Image 1 (cartoon, one colour):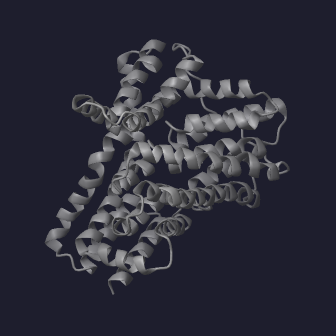
Image 2 (image 1 turned 120 degrees about the vertical axis):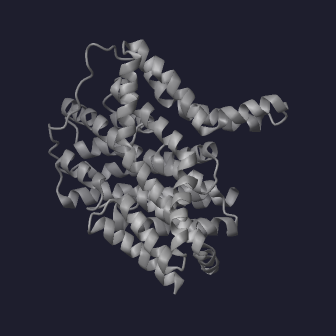
Image 3 (image 1 turned 45 degrees about the horizontal axis):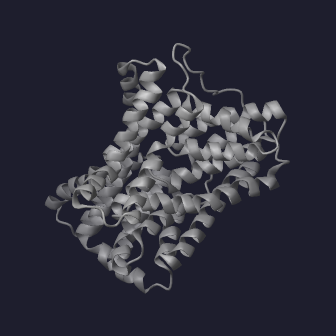
Length: 439
């Protein structure tokens, strides 16, 4: 009976979000309370479970996601992202322009949230297409594949960061493994698959083009833009690798490294550097930089609430004891835990559309399985991330963004965008399963 309640809860969650268009946070809250009562949690304990669920997940995430949003907003507002994009397009030339756009999408996609990155970079695709008379979908898909991969696989994006916290994984290790998976996923879903799309007819819109930076501010140089935008990635990699290279560090040095390697500290250092290099140094006052940061936090308010909602659902599953029972049943299935996690996330993604909701909902179901089977938590994070990108279609805002910006028919949008997302997802899963052999 308990398993039936969980299945019905997931169905209700999907229906509320996809059919009735209920906000994801409210849907999580309502379904979690209903599931808690149905699973026998005393009503007087439910408010405490709700608060504990929010606190357990948001305590370690709020700083990282908020600081990451501030950095991304400043990278966009300062013109650094545009500078990186223009430089890449120039370096690679017309013949290899796809590769330049793809690398640009990957670099810019690391600090920027997907929606911001899409709106920021699509005009660059169109300018390249118009200038060199190239097919729009063939030219632009590699860049958007790179953006999608960073959104699903790599910290400091909200979903991977939240999954790292839920599974008690290592942010730096997850980032390194995610980059290893990202490279083949982007190559196959981008330049390789795009070869089949040269004849897709597109009529790119001229609306929605981003505004140019205010002339009163200087635009940062290429090196400054690149270093400031990617500093969190290099810092995370550095503090992850150093302990392996120098295992005999003294106690004091080790404690300093532990402090610096905390993801929130890494993000704070990167933001402090960018405040000067992309803000004050370019002519903005401290107040103007802070206004950028305030706007960034407003942009991610609902994302934070969705993550909080997933924490409530997880806590209800734990409080009721159903998580342990589910783990026991799933452990008996002839399916690898990483494949099972990917499959659950993929099913929810297809039903709901939101990659973030899909990954976090699946996490609440498979979390006890990770503890019982001993599967690598970093790989489970990436498996759920890959599953959450599977087959984007009409219930996903990204699908419609791509369709409308490129002026495609539904058929061609499915053929290009939906297949690209599916390739990214399947290649990601394949890479996770291969890594699990060695890790």
